[in-house]
Amino acid sequence: MLNADTIKIIPEWKELLKAEFEKPYFTSIKSHYLEAKKQGAPIYPPGKLTFNALNLTPPAKINVVILGQDPYHGSFLRDGVEIPQAMGLSFSVPRSIPIPPSLKNIYKELHRSLGIIAPNHGDLSAWCERGVLLLNAIFSVEKGKAGSHAYFGWENFSDAIIKIISRECEHIVFMLWGNYAKKKIPLIDQSKHAIITAPHPSPLAQGFVGSGVFLKAQEALQSFGKAPLDWSLPQ
Image 1 (cartoon, rainbow, N blue to C red):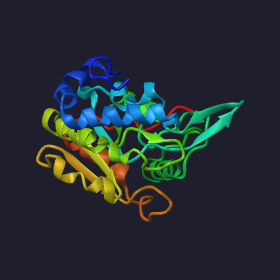
Image 2: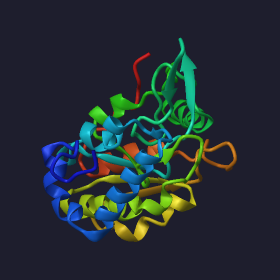
Image 3: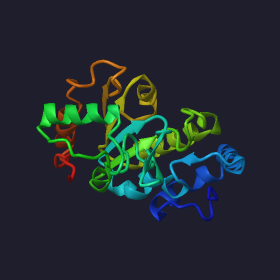
Image 4: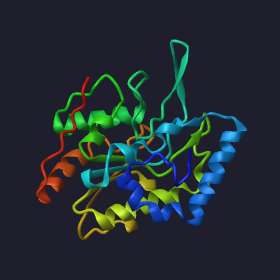
C-alpha cells in the first residue's frame, strides 16, 4: 500500500510529493507500516483512507488547513460490524458513529461565532470539497493505542506537506489549535499566509469555545480577496 509507485494519492499531490517518497524517512515509514501490518493488529484509518485528506482536497483547491495530531484510535460496533473512528481527516468521523468531544466543541464554536447549526454526525468531508485540508500530522495508529505510530516518521511527511503548501500556494489560512499544532508555525511563510491559533478543542483544554477562530478565518479569507467559506454541513 505504501509504495511510491502504487500509492493511493491523486496525481496533483503525487507530483508535488514525488521527492518526499524518495527520501530515506519515507522508506522508514513504509518499513514500519508494513511491519505493523504483519503483526496483525488493526491499523486505523483503513488503508484506503490513509491519504484521504490529500485525495479529497487537491493543492489548487486549498483555502484552509486544519491540523490535527494523531488519528482516532477507537472504533464502534454497528450491526455487528466494527467501524473505525478514523477516516483520514483530522477531527472527522464516519456518519454512523458518535461525535467525539473535540468535534462537539468545534460545532459549539461554529454555532457561537457563525450561527451554524451542528449536524447530527461527525463527517467533515463536505469541508474538504470546499477547500479545507483536514491534515493529521501522523497518518496511522494501532487500534486502541494512541500515538502508537508516532515513531514511524509521519511528522517528516506532514511537515513537508505544510512547507510545500506554504511555498506553492497563495493566501492560505492555517488553523493551528493546541500547543502541538502551534509548533508548526515556523514551517509557514507568514508574509503570504494567515495563521489562526487557539487552544485545542478537547474538553480537557480551556478556551477553544469563544476563541472566534471561524470568524477570524472568514475575515482572513476576505482580506485575501477570497469568498468566505461555507462551514455548514449537511444533516
